[in-house]
Image (tube, rainbow, N blue to C red; front, side, top):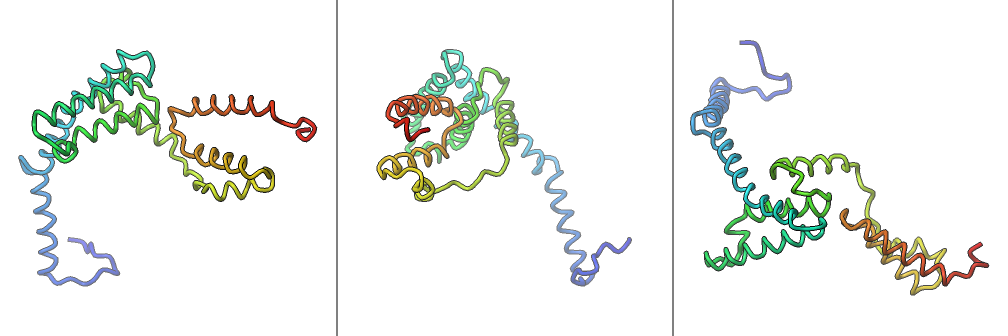
Length: 210
């Protein structure tokens, strides 16, 4: 057998080498044996897929019975809330996440896809396909984000241009909050700011604006 030891590797005794070789072979057997780790992982994946279909069907139902995505989100949350309350009562459960963590994970992922990425469940054949679409959007938006500025830093930056303190404080608060807008709410935020800008333009001294 050729020498497989890197030059900078600690020199091992024959007994130590045999122990190491045996360890990895035993892990191989544990992984590939019938009923071993790989089989259990495959079975677990199938079971998760089956479980996800039930809650994803609720998301699709919500979307089918809503006019907008926002209404679908509210409908889905209401369906989940009812199901959770009923389950807690029927099974005498206090903390649902501890007793049924899979439900919480699937619900959270679906809501995140709808809220942050604007994904409509009705457009996807399964929760898995929905999740893949969300991951792709995450990758597309995966450019490093600039560090979030504190409100104090924003206020300091505005101090040389906005001299009236109360207005500067409010403006710095607005800019601070705008760093954390939900993707699904960006258009709403834009509308609010446009309306505010239109109202403020009536208060501007046009002699100074020029």
